[in-house]
Length: 337
Image 1 (cartoon, rainbow, N blue to C red):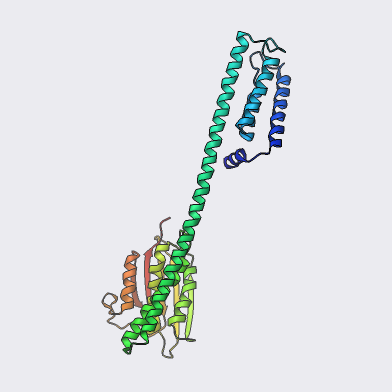
Image 2 (image 1 turned 180 degrees about the vertical axis):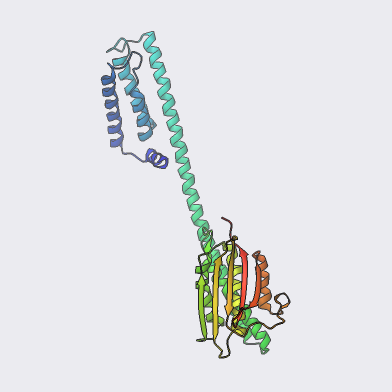
C-alpha cells in the first residue's frame, strides 16, 4: 500500500490534470466549509482547507500545493475570519493568517521532503536492480566459462589417453575425465545465483543416468531410483555428486552379477534425526570378508571417503544382509532451516 502511494505521488501529471484537481479540491473544500459553518464553533476557519492543501501537494506537487494554499487562505480570510465577507486585516485576523501560513508552509515543506526522499529511493532501487542484473549476467557467464573450461580439460585428458599404452594409466585418465565431466554438469546446474537450495532427488534423477551412460555397461543396467524430496545447499551438491559418481563407478566395476548384468539401486531420504541418507547398492558378488573401507587402495573410494568427511558425514560399505550385493551408505547432515 505504501509503495503504491509513493509511486502515485511521483507519477507525472498533465497540466490539465493539475489544474482540474487543484480547482476541484479548492471548490470542494470551500463547499464543505460552508456546510460545516453552522456546526462548528468559532475559531476553525481552515478545518476543510488543510486536507485540500495536503492532497494537492501530495498528488500534484509543491507548486500546485502552494497555489492551493494561497486560494484556500484567501477564501478563509474573506468568508470565515471576522469581519466576515471582507479582507479587513485586524490583529485577530493577522494572527489567524500567520498561523495558517505557518501550518501550510510546514505541510508543503514536509511533503516536498518526502517526495524528494521517495524519488531518491526509487532512483537507488532502479540502480540496485540494474547492478543486480549485471551481476547475474556476470555470474552466469562465469559459471558458463568454468563449466566450459572443465569440459576442455576433460577433453584434453581424453586426447592424452590416446598416446598412453599402459592400461592402468588409461583407466586413471578415463576416471579423471569422467570426474571432470560430472563437475562440469553440476556447475551448469548451479547457474542461478539466487538459488539457495536444491532437491537432491531431482538432482540424482538428472545425474545418475548421465553417469551410467558414461561408465555403465550399455544395455546391461537395471536402474532403480527410490528417492524422497530432500533439500540440500548448493555447496553440498558437488561433493554429493562426486561421492555418488564414485560409488556408482565402483558398482559398475564390481557389482555386475554372473551374467554381467548390473542391478543398481540409488536411494535418498531424510532421517528423523535431522540427517540424510544416500545409498547406492548393487546385486553383485558382494565385498570380500577382509574388506576395510578405511584401508582401501581404490582411488575412487578414497575420493568418496574424503568428500564424505567434507560433508560432515560418514560413509560405510557393507554386504547386503540376506541378499547378494554391496550397500554403500552415506549419512550426512541436512542443511539448516
